[in-house]
Length: 293
Figure (cartoon, rainbow, N blue to C red):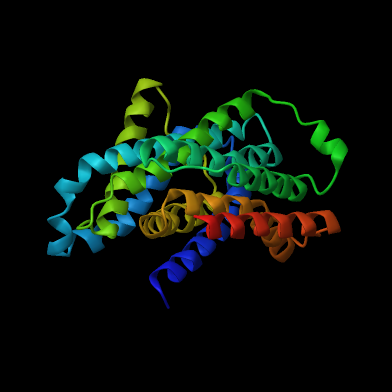
């Protein structure tokens, strides 16, 4: 299997893991402060990865040289997660799913300035088609539901978060060095996240309140920690290094479809004709964007 094809399979897997995280995150939102729950995620994920890094001399030697760059990458990564949890206290997964479709376009716009990449009119058109396709999935083809969408406090917060997600992808590519060890970069990104979260915890005087998390909610947190944090961090950074941020973020258009499929499989929620059509349109837009890069 070629390096590029492998990267596409990797990011497709990550897309479904992220889709699951949207479902799980809404179950956890509002239990404790988003800064506290994000800090706990990063701590558990870094503890799981620590033995792999510290027991390997080659990895240990890369820690210092990776630290500064990882701090910048983790800043955007951390702010995104805080914003997502905070937004879900005031808005719905429906609204956040809609707003998240802006990420590929934002990433492409940032790439113009950072990587001097050009975007043609046709590419802009494909981004719009991708947004339309994902909205069809999110709103289940219900025009009245789409027209009733209005921005609230949570939506404004999540719009800011989408900028951070785009900048996370850009920075992961920009600050990567050929001699980097990806495992170390992921580990140091998590460590950087712990530092940023700890500073935010002190600055905003946020209580940990971890005792409020029930055993069932800890299982949800386990999914977010292992699969939606540790595994996806590795997969996204690995794929971004090979494919670049614009290609990786093109897969965002598949997120609502992935969520719909996961809800169908695990919660037996139906997929109507318009949702199925939206998944096809989103997939088409993603394929065109990948082909044009």
